Length: 146
Image (cartoon, rainbow, N blue to C red; front, side, top):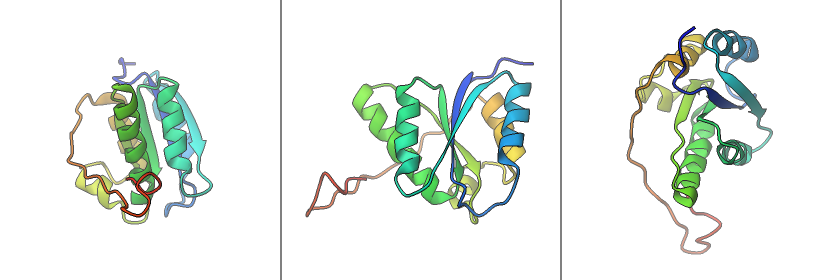
C-alpha cells in the first residue's frame, strides 16, 4: 500500500447522472487499497454539489472530487475557486466520470471508467491548471456571479 498523494478525499455524488454502476463499492475498494480516508455526500438538487464541496473544503479535505457529469463538475469547480479566493488555500479538484457525455473529464484526460479514474486520484501527483472565466450578471451581480 503506497502513500496516497491525497490522504483525505471527499466525493460529491450526483445520483441523477447518466451512469448506473456500483459507485460506493468501487470507491471503497480502491480507497481502502491505497489507505485513503474518504467521505461522500449525495446531491438532491442544483446547488448541492457546490455547497457540499465548500463544506468539505472548510473541513480540511486534501481533495474534493465529483462523480457526475459536466454540471456537477461545474458546481464543484465554482466551490473550489470561491473557497480559494476566500481562504487563500487551494484544494485540488478530482473528476470522476459519472455523466452521460463527460466532456470535461474527457478534455482533462480522465479515464472513462470509474475504477481507473479513482486509481488516478490515489496514485497521481500530477495536477493541471486550467483557464477559467468569471461571469457576472449586471442586473444581480451577487446572485449570478459564476
